[in-house]
Image (cartoon, rainbow over all chains, first blue to last red; front, top):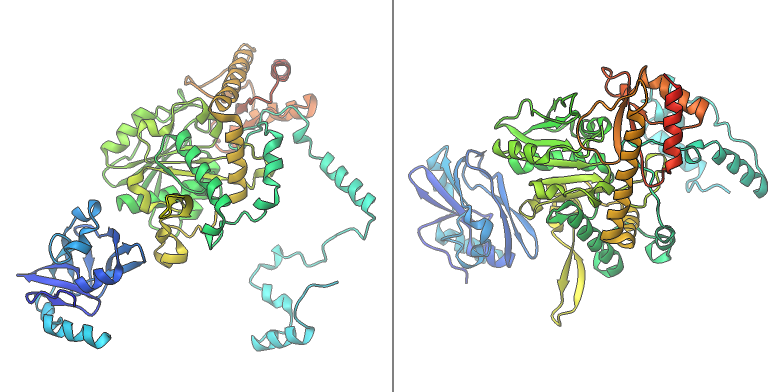
Amino acid sequence: MPNIPENLRYSKDHEWVEVNGDIATIGITDYAQSSLGDVVYVDLPRAGDKFDAHEAFGSVESVKAVSEVFTPVGGQVTEVNEGLNDAPETVNTDPYGSAWFIKLKMDNPGEADGLLSAEEYEEYLSSME
Amino acid sequence: MRYIPNSPEERAGMLAEIGLSEPAELFRSIPADLRLNRPLSIIGPLAETEVLSEMNAMAGRNTAVTKPSFLGGGVYAHYSPTIVDHLIQRSEFFTSYTPYQPEISQGTLQYIFEFQTLICQLTGMEVANASMYDGSTAMAEAYLMAQRVTQRNKIIVADSVHPQYRQVAETYTQHGDAEIFTARHNPKSGRLEEITGLDSETAAVVVQSPNFFGCIEDLAKISEAAHSAGAMLIVVVTEALSLGILKPPGAFGADIVVGEGQSFGIPMSFGGPHVGLFATQEKFIRQMPGRLCGIAYDKSGRRGFVLTLSTREQHIRREKATSNICTNQGLIALAATIYMETLGRKGLREVAGRNLQNAAFAIERISAIEGYSIPHKSPTFNEFVVRGPRPAAEILETLRLEFGILGGIALSDFYPDRPNDFLVCTTELNTRSQIESLGAALHQIS
């Protein structure tokens, strides 16, 4: 069973969001990383780039495939995790910690409330099987 | 026998379906004055001997291959050892396409890997791809790559870069976000001395070395200026043989090196097919266009060749690919590989040295002629500009018609402010007596 921390919000595209004031930290879930397999590269946007909700902001390349990652909420990128350039494998080992992708200043901080809770995401995963 | 697979009825049906009555109407978007409107004038059936005689007569009209030629400017007459032509005609190489199930073709992948390795060694770069269509489109792809890497759109290209390369790159990039600016060369040195317009918005500075005038650019200086503005340095090489003797662009910090590989055993063939070279530093590899062949080992440690980082390419990434180039110049890259491996490091250096010596001899001869001078005060390789006593186009026409010598390229075709200048190239194929004849002829044209 994939790890699904209680304190985060989730999207059906398998991104997680941690909300802190109007800043959203975004990464991909444990389920996503285990489906992708060994991650070899993460392509990220630049600080200052703006995205609407559900827009592709980058991609994750694994030994199997390249998959796009989407913003669960809209806003402007304030920070990207440069550490992933040198250590993309941390997406596999620490998806909710050191392998966060971007921090976003949300246009509408309320938007995150519409995302799935840990419980809902877990239900969503079981419904997919 | 006709090879049209559908019947007249089927064709009529297809035309009716889209509301047309004549196949000719399919071409109505072509302006009337551009249409031929008459059958092609093709002579009637001939016997095989007559065909051969007709073709020989046509080939005989191509005097460019028999007259002493000093033409360069991006396409060069070099000697290609017979082994090159012989080996590329082996049936194993008949399908030059890089295959879509690539790993089954280990021989193809191996020579691509060798090609990449040789291009890296010659350019002093870390990664080279499996080749591009030609030098000019490779340069255009370098513009696009620099935009992707820097997230900037301003490209500053020296006007000492081959004018036709610049035209191709403009056409290639016209629907994108690139803003192309031209920096003027210094007419005294023939080199780019000042990069006009270089600023923090600049994605890349583009220079050719040896440049269109044959001058070797001061890459160290240009590299430092470009990098201090956070721009990439793109170095273009149209005469690949120069890499046999000059310090490689990678040693000056070039971020991308692109070029034309025709000099490596490829016939001039009226301008193509040739082969584009593309090399960069490893940190930019994911933004590089084109195919890339890598080496891999299976679980028993046996070596194999694979296509690698295909995720950049259009058959996987579709519209997000780094480029829509999908194949490469496989057969020509193979010919270039065989050429380079036949000559080896020492051989390439020797041939390059002979080019350099011939040019030095020609410069000495021509600059001693009354009325003729060498306007640029910079080191050159096998090409150089000559300033004549009257319009270059006239001098070159007299050389051709009265002396049977193809003397060079008039710069006025590309630089209207330089009416009396022409570009002269000497390779290892130009004999000492040819160069002396050129000098003697120019002596008489004053």
